[in-house]
Length: 448
Ligand SMILES: [Zn+2]
Image (tube, rainbow, N blue to C red):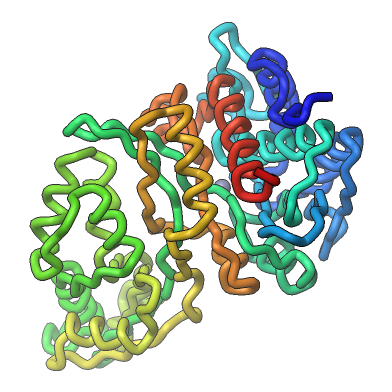
């Protein structure tokens, strides 16, 4: 055995191994709800134990086990967790080119099925990384942990990472890698960037209730109809422009794209950044402040009754560091003071954590691209959605990033098939991403 045999076999052998594990995982239907992730956790356990690793199933509910596997070091270096959720969003059969739980591989090297990109691909490649390290006799300076967690897509039962970090304080690690980045983008000016998720916005849903006077619908009073008042309040919310705020992760993102920016003219910075790649036009405006989206409406329970109260639920997303008091101030500024209304929050904030980018893990990741995709630069960003990395940050203070680099599967395929029909990943990306993880583990925790 050579000193670096953990770097793995040739591409073809590696592709077969990751593809097989991914297909096996896709064939276990873990649609959430209800999840039923235990068979997937057992499948991974069998695979990893065969490579000589210690594994355990950790379950709050028997049908929804998490898998924990570790490769212990001598404690002289940083600890790292590789994560991947085993559940998937449901898949309706019609419309799929190949049945969503068949785990089909076609002649052109595409692996088809629910979870192929979100995120059994990542889970499989991280499991294979662990197996290769173990088989190759790799001894990290710090501990390497692999966690395949249940219940990311739904989360209401609190049986996945949200629960696990509390139940298992021994899983505290310095660094972790989960989903949420890895998109390779060629910018309009020729540069290449690879997205790295370093944080996310928080959800903070609110309820606005317009107050009016009840009455019979046969003689409507336009003066004080709660529904009409609500309509005006919703209009004002739609027209309101939330305040711009630059958080460190977004400042890093704009800095990486544009060099020095004038923080007093963020509109200009956003416009210039958006012209570099269509992706930015979708997400960047939402990363510079609170977003407020009116969604569900409640009015009268009877058509012939003018209600005294009518409400709208607001899906609000705030940046790390923005709390309920800040959001309330903005909502009241948007709603004005001339109409009677009540305002409340429906839930406490969820999410809203971020990790710094000046870390050894960041450097370890960048060094992979320097070698395998020269010129490509990591582009830190925060997500408008939610991901499990939040639990690692808040429970353990872990520097938690999301990335799974891929460069063969086109962006459109990733975007169009996420949580949709015909989810698929190219096998070359399974190899590429596995090599990325091997590189990062060695650069961060190897003996140099
Ligand atoms: Zn996911």
